[in-house]
Length: 413
Image (tube, rainbow, N blue to C red; front, side, top):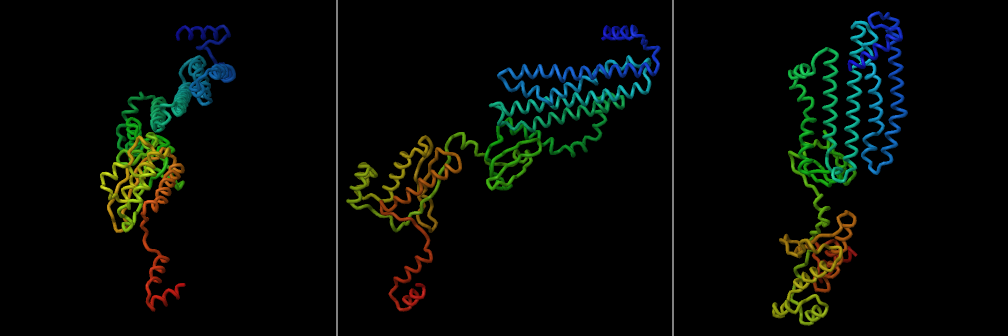
């Protein structure tokens, strides 16, 4: 630095400007010359250097370098050059440190700190964009971490700027803020809790953008589309948006359906209500027919001693149908079971997993399976249970051969 200083002083001496003998007019001329040099270097960087860098990055196969040298970063780099030139050359325009000199140097230093902070924030934004496009990082909730990094940079820049303005060491300024730590903790409570929660969510891989989560307590049932430092936004299936603080997802429990998508299987667990009055032993003719169609195995017929219940044959048929169905997963749990009766028929639950996890495709698979199984009930002499409706009551009433009931039926008809 001393060599450069001596060189500049020698150059000024050759031009007839001596630092210790400068008049105010000559100081103004030197400041103007510094401004011209700073402006020239600014436009050289903006119109020559930056386009050259972009030309190089555009030729590469990678995209991260394009984001790393985007408009925000390159513009911030260009804006750092003028204050740096002024901060370096301004002392040569004054023969002594006057009040004007001190004010100008302070303003330049503060502006330089602000531009440097802007550059770092732009760089962090570029890293965020790069991580959002990276295969292993795009599903991580890192937005809150990047936001916290920006806040730290801005706070550090403010502390340095305050130290420059009041001519104090940044450490002493930071120590002075310790007295108001309680107030700062209150102001930044959500930010601090959000940062801690964001780190936990990311480290434990608890939540990613695009996950389907459910929290009945808070009315959440939809897709996560944004995870930031202070908020987690979920778009419910009714297209409403629910906003949650990140720490709520750590302190409270929630259901994440990501495992269902990753396993490529969505559960079907629907009961068929069987009318218990239709459950009976099969006749020999029926057993022969079921055996011919492959719905009944000789082993079951022999084991039951010829007294096979039609519901048992129907359960075997359901398992055969599910196993042969390409839309039902065969490598996951599959069964047909009885559930507890509650006065509404015998619940026969079909438990399996669809290979389709999309909502529309899943509902179609589930509907196809249940519709087929309901349509096959009469083939086994079984009936679905359903509570009597108005039409059922009318037919039942009309079947009673009494004069009073005949009058009722006539009025209804």
